[in-house]
Image 1: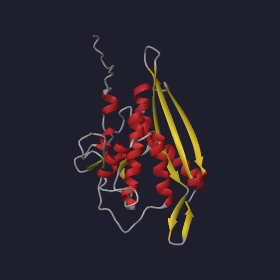
Image 2: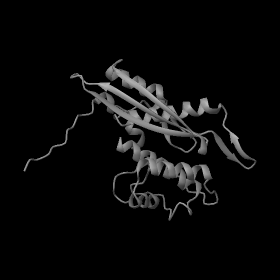
Image 3: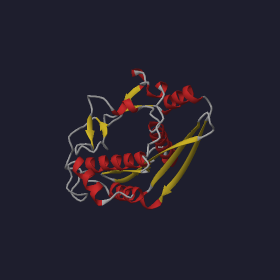
Image 4: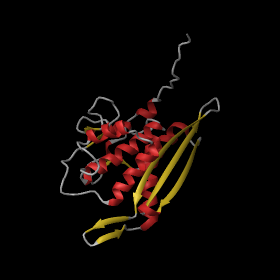
Length: 221
């Protein structure tokens, strides 16, 4: 019987090197991030101009949101191309007590934010910026069952008085369908955010589920 061996390529030290502390910021959810320009600077340190960047943009009318998929490829010395994909979405309207309100900057701003996040997810799969998700002062979401498929974020208590919007729920269902997440896997994700079902989940739990489903797609890529 032939023994199958997985092909492995060591991650270069330049890729694994952590971003300087002064580059790291916190968003409104307490998550750490670094501006995309620093990701590109790191990529160009490693491969120079020998990389390719492709972007696919989609408007989803029924959800009034945009979806962006970014593909980044670089060429090995033997001529082989390696590609990594990242995706992200952004809604065009925010829910307010007075009703839906279009975000400042409109579709152009939404595409910029989605493209930025998708780019960083693609480069994360190359190993750039992994330390941002691996600090001791952060809480693991989605990995409590020991499957190792969680991600790291600063955890705040859920506000169960805030219910998810229809847009959030539709976006969540679309992601689940696109990623072909099985019932058993989706139940694991529900457990990881302490939700019995989508119908009983609060807005924060649904937001975490969306992040987890986007993380599932990144891992599959």
